[in-house]
Length: 392
Ligand SMILES: Cc1cc2nc3c(=O)[nH]c(=O)nc-3n(C[C@H](O)[C@H](O)[C@H](O)COP(=O)(O)OP(=O)(O)OC[C@H]3O[C@@H](n4cnc5c(N)ncnc54)[C@H](O)[C@@H]3O)c2cc1C
Image (cartoon, rainbow, N blue to C red):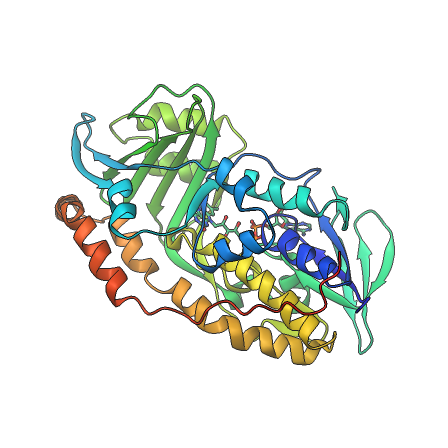
């Protein structure tokens, strides 16, 4: 049994998944999270492909399924709220059966936290002020003032990772903006715009506003996306300027979003030549964010965490060997996840009236296209077992 002390920064998806598998192999993980508690709610995310296997091997699939939002489809509407196209996700799932689950990000984070809280030290409401790696370990100073020594440091702190900035370099080197911005908020008491389990989307050229209600509640996720230029700034005025003159229900929804603690950022991917430096390694969005339009970030985060823990155990804690194995196993999976995001952007945020019309027509072919796509899709190798040195 390996008893290395591992500090993981970030308690969303990648962090707790990694902590789970490390603890099961005898490592001693500590997770530091800047939020005061697991952040609740949030937009729906997907657990799919190998991530379903990871959740299953953790014994969490029933809890994950119980929290499923099960979106049945998307309806595209014009300014008068008339349907112009629809994506029947239920029909697509029936055509291409799979075990994927969609659930709110916060619910998944909570499930992962509860599965680990007894075996893992969590430090909520704290962060890393500085990290000083050397040949034998990493000395970390926390914001709370405490200084501690760890064998390894893992950045599981998302697209804007602090660990990456402190150890690898500035965001400008690694964060590739795709030319869009996104704002998201979860709203209470939204009047139904479509049937339950259906997301309604309104487009004008280069802009998209979507609303989807939660099953059995009047809570809804509202999403605003738009094309940005080089002068983009991450402030409220920029968002307001982009949407204030839009038709449909946009102005009312915009006011609701602005009244919330909303998420607002560029739509970006992360690309690094190496995911590790010495005793510091990145996992999840911090290492390889595929951009939210890919719908792959959560699954990559779970699979990456599982593989990293497995490689560390298989290499008996020899971190250099393990980090190399982690990159070898995961790079092809990440490449697949990061691919195709521009096509999704063109479908979700068409940039001319003609492109909007063409997208609406294309939705009629969605089921046969999904079936054909699945026939030709390249399957990755099955997820390695790593069932070595399990404890407890
Ligand atoms: C609007 C939106 C919609 C999305 N839709 C989908 C989807 O449909 N399907 C899908 O698969 N994925 C989707 N994603 C992406 C998905 O949320 C991420 O890929 C996934 O959450 C990655 O998990 P992670 O653990 O790597 O990072 P994150 O979930 O970003 O978590 C990082 C954690 O680190 C913490 N943290 C950050 N900095 C520090 C610090 N300095 N100190 C301590 N803690 C810190 C944060 O508080 C957070 O808890 C979406 C993302 C967004 C923003």
